[in-house]
Every structure is written in structure tokens, then in C-alpha cells.
Image (cartoon, rainbow, N blue to C red; front, top):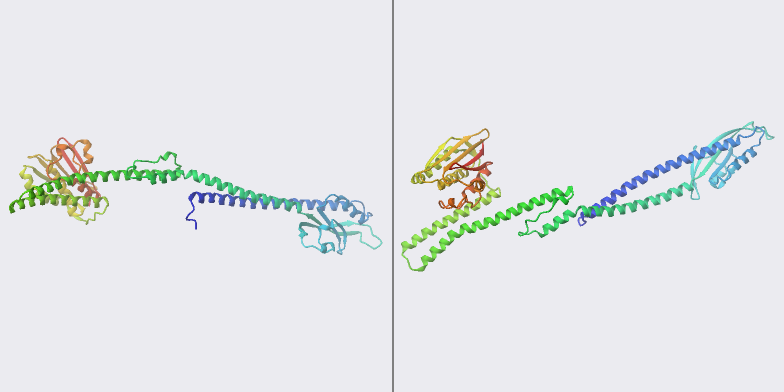
Length: 466
């Protein structure tokens, strides 16, 4: 198994294997081409020798004895030690052997050979042969010979010089293949090592990461194209982690800040209650006051749990038809007493239907109305308008009052955020209502936006149409 080998070693081995494979294929092809080339040269030389022998035997006239002709052939082949010749008559008698060491004992005895270009091995030497026939015009001799005499010529060519060259070439080729594979492995290891340097920097950076060093980034410009996407993805991950840690830090600070007031009130009231004996009615008043603080803490904890589920996309909600006008009217009736007490008028116009969780959508609209009441001056007006578009439904809640600065409009939906000090404490809100509303709207596939101009602030919810 290769689980423990590094990627650099694997790439180096791959380079070596690929180089060796290509070189072996090239060597085999080159060897076959050399064999074919030498075979062509050998055949050409054999045919040349056969032509030489024929021409030499046919020299002279019909009165020239055969022995003299054969002597002329042997003289013509002086210095050609790699060529053997056997001349045989029609009866199989061997008339002349030139360099008999090139032939087997049976061939020297006159045994016929099969094929026009036979081949054989003898004493570690390879031979390639060529068999041809010659008809000589001869004068009749005293033995009553025919005036034309057919002869068979077998030429043997020693291939030792070829085999020695091919063996040397093969040894050099295989040594070159091994050396090339080794060099390819070294260069492959070096290239892979250099190419994977960005990954090692990624590893080193990752090992050194901590909550205090999340601002570090890798430079993708010095990374190769294959690793650049990985580096950019890691930088994106670091940016998201840094933002998440920052939000967590801010969130923890906000929670501590928001919980400090009710807890401080509870401690103060409890210390005052224990400072001296009190009547039963006084203790009941203190407990009632403490209960309000406990309820405030419970609402805050519940809201934070709701937001935590929303961030994890774990808000399970039903899907049913919801009449926004009906829900808005019910909430207007609920807040009517508080609004009349402050002389605030709440008006609703338009109607539309969406699909979603009725209780969650009602809570979202309730948060918008509660926020509008909190920031509307006495005697002001709140307008709740519902309109239907081609693909969506929009619910807008507008209220008169202190405008929101433009640079704060995108932050009004953040947890514990208040747009300005003058909008800080109008009621007992903890700054979670609009954040919860945004989570509900997004869970239903919608969007929420804020606009503040001309002394009127409008929060609008856009939901997909049924």
C-alpha cells in the first residue's frame, strides 16, 4: 500500500515510470527498425554475392572446365571471411566448399536446405543463407556429362558483427533508459517539490492559525494556476472565519452588555430587600419587580436561541396559505390600546396571500409594528401597506419619527444594534426584534429592507408570491 508515500514521491515515481515506458517503447521500435534494416542489408549483400558467383561461373567458353570456374569463384571471394559458399550439383554432390566453417556438418555433407533464405546457428554464430541455381554451358567430358550443367549455390553470411552491434546497442539503450528514468525521477521530484511549495505554505499557515492570527492571508500570485484556486479558497475560508470570530466576539460583548442591566437590577433589589425586615406586601412588590426582569431575560434568551437556529438554517416551519391582511388586522387590534393611549393611528391598506408558517410570519409583522410604535412620536401615524407584484408580495410598515442615518440603514437588522443614541431606549426592546424578523423572512425565501427619508421610516418585507 502507498498510503504513507508523499505526493512528491508519487509524482517523481510517475515521471520515472512514464519516461521509462516511453523510452522502452522507443527502444523496442528502434530495435525492430534496426533488425529490419540489417536484414535488408544482409539480403542485399547475399544477392550481390550470388550475382558475383553467377557472373564468375559463366566467364569463359564451354570448354572451360568446371573446376577452373570454381577456382575463380573462390579467388573472387578472397577477403570475404564472413561469407561461405557451397556449390552442389543436381545429384546432391558437393563440388566446392568455401569457408566450410560457416556450414553445419549435414550441410557440408550435401544435405539440402529448406526455403530460399534459410537461417541457422552454429557454435554461437547466427547465419543467414541464400539458395540459388545456375545453369552452366559445359563441353562433354569423358564421363559423358551433359552440355548444360545445373548447379545449386548456397551462400552463408555470418551475422556476428550484426549481433554484436545489436547486443551493444541494447545494453546501451537499457542503460540509457535506466539513467533517463533516474534523471526523470530526480527532476520530477524537484519539479513536484517546487510546485507543491504553496501547499506547504498553506500547511504552515494553517498550523500557525489561532483566534489572534486569523487576519493572515496567502498571496495567490506566487502560486501556480493549479494551486491558485486552493489558495484563494483558503483565503476565503480564513476571511469567513475571521468574520465569524468577530461576530462571535461582538455577540458575546453585546450579550454581556444587555444582560448586565437586568442582572444588576435583580442584585440591587435583592440586596435592598435583605437590608432590613419588610412586610409581606413589600416582599411581594420586590418579587413582582424581579419577575419582570426575569421575564425580560427569558425573552432575550429565547430570542437568541431563535437567532442561533436561524443561522444554522434549522428553522422548521409549516407551509400554509397565510392572509397577510387578516394577520395585520389582528395585530393592529392587539396594539390598538397602546396606540390610542399615545394618540397614534394605525392604518392598513391592500391585501395578499403567501405560503409559509402563519405564527412565524405573524411574529415578523408584530416585530415591525412594535418597532414602529416604539419610534413613532405621540400623535403620529403608522401605515401598513400590502401590495402584490408579478412574482412577489410586499408588506411595508411606515412610521413618522426620528430618521435613521443612511450609514445605519443596512445595520438596523443586526442583533443588539440601535440606529442612533436618540433611538436607544424607547421601551424595553433588547435590539433583537428586527434581527429575528430578518431571519424569519429569509427562512421563507424573502428579503427585508429599510428606507428612511422625509421624516418617514419604512421597513419592507418581500416574500415569494403564492
